Image (tube, rainbow, N blue to C red; front, side, top):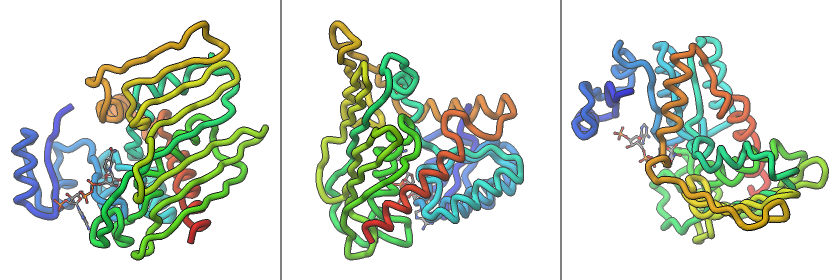
Length: 291
Ligand SMILES: NC(=O)c1ccc[n+]([C@@H]2O[C@H](COP(=O)([O-])OP(=O)(O)OC[C@H]3O[C@@H](n4cnc5c(N)ncnc54)[C@H](OP(=O)(O)O)[C@@H]3O)[C@@H](O)[C@H]2O)c1
């Protein structure tokens, strides 16, 4: 795997990053980037509301797409992106790096939990209010839910699936985007998740997962953890799991794209498109409840 080219709205910025990364080509438009035959896959890292435009151009050019989270700023944009990729037979995956963290993967696959009864998770920090910044700007897909909330809601989705019911409270910023949200998600059998997200306060940013036999305490930042402790009635003594920082980060999702292309797969089983779409719908519902 290597960085073949960098695209930007500005050639100077593209050239500067290409030089930093040792990439042989730089382009001042995404159309030129997508026309480069040496490019196999495009990593889309523009603000949410600009994901669809770049991803659609890459898909039309037959390039695989790794698109930053959330897949898009709206459910309709996300659905269109998935439709375009499926119709073209081109690989598409949301770059949800949390799912590729080795500790999160270990947790999701550990049968010793018994039945997972609840998930608690928060992601919030104090972001100075600036209506021009993408976090606060509606036209750039701003708001806590899409940017940060996708991790606590996403951990619940990974471990418990989609809720049967959801109650959300929160507040809006003067620009109209959601500034904070807390949700209770209810699942069949009386299981639940408690999730919080905020641009208006520093949260613990930890998570805990309680099963009938085991509990996991995942240290901050729980979406890219390097330490997790398992305890509970299923263990004689707490079990500590520490990740080498070199194994944290974006490498896992990049390997997923490489392996999928080598195997001719157009979707990932670790981050399936249907689950990305379901999350878009869930976050839109959460947003509606605090409007
Ligand atoms: N996985 C993670 O850990 C992680 C972390 C942070 C962000 N993200 C996701 O990555 C995406 C980008 O976030 P960011 O914080 O990097 O955003 P950003 O710095 O505001 O924007 C990233 C780049 O997108 C281009 N851009 C900005 N506004 C644009 C517009 N209106 N139209 C087209 N291109 C535009 C800019 O490049 P040029 O000016 O050079 O064109 C900019 O450098 C978001 O979807 C976010 O959720 C993921």
